Image (cartoon, rainbow, N blue to C red; front, side, top):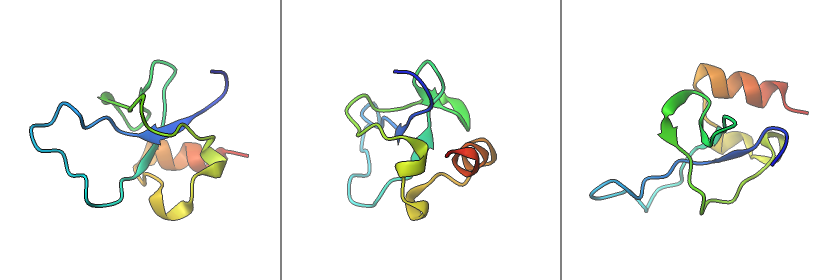
Length: 73
C-alpha cells in the first residue's frame, strides 16, 4: 500500500473485546500501527480506507491522528 491509510484497531488479543459499540478509525503508520499510539496494532481484517473517506464521527481524535485526518485530501 502506498500513501496514508486508516483502519480500526486490532482487539482480537483482548480476553473480552468489546464488539457491540462503534469503534474509532485510526490513521496507520507504515508498519500498520496507530499513528496516535505506535503500540496499538491496526486490524488486518478491518476495512482499510483512505483518511479522507473516513466519516468524521468515527475518526480518532487524538492529536496525531486528528492532524493526519485534517491534512488528508
